[in-house]
Image (cartoon, rainbow, N blue to C red; front, side, top):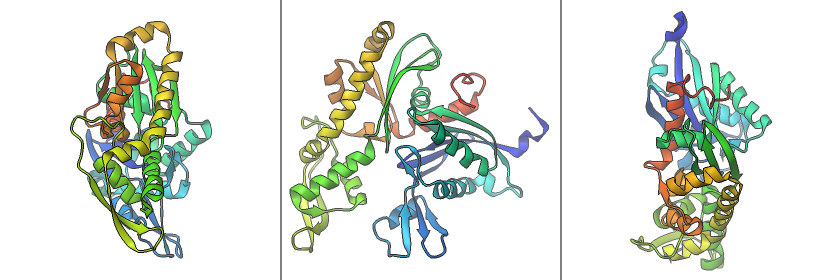
Length: 342
């Protein structure tokens, strides 16, 4: 413990394509959509997070909503920096200080990330007054967050379905033995639903409406134990141009998402085929763990279980599994030192 430690704040960040979560003092302080609204004329950011999300699809020509992260990595450097700055500024303990504290940060990144993309994350953090920066791979953070002991000589398989990417990894002895990252996740599901509504119902719906359909009646399979009721969806009729409403069932959404889920299934099978036999034996006994927002899709665990002939478990509070793991790694830097990239 150094003399200036009281001037340093520890924060753990899950920089997601869809949502950004920040843990400070062991609590999730920020849980906001990763989106900013920018004034085109002045170039200023006028809203971030939930406020900017409400503007999405409803802006005029002088305001533009931007999602600064694409496929789990920074696509718009400036907007992402402004967004993180804004989120950190709103952390109560940092807000009430007279000086700007230096930060110790752990940020989680997709496992299929390039060196250039890692650099972009590091640079963003440095501009935020971060003195110590650690990076952790998402599947690793998810495994810690689920409560698995990743340091044991035992194989565990994690599937983390986020907004931009699906990360599949086999973890043992505090390292990733084999992994696959596919760019099929929540955002692709949302686009699939919007496309289905256009082609099957002649109804043009925005991203927010497609997202709502996914959350309320989204399903990965047509045989659910307790299916959700049909949903009334409003949008614009493509033929007449008038606003109209259509009724949609979960079975239709399962059909719309089928191709994308097949790609995730193929990636899971490919990862299993590359797994060393001893670890494959462990996975046979322990099953597969699902984390991330995409794992909340109804019937997805059932469908993956059918495909792999293995038990599939969804983590409790899957949306926060990754940020929980990142927070735990931050709390115990010595224990997880071989997992973190400095």
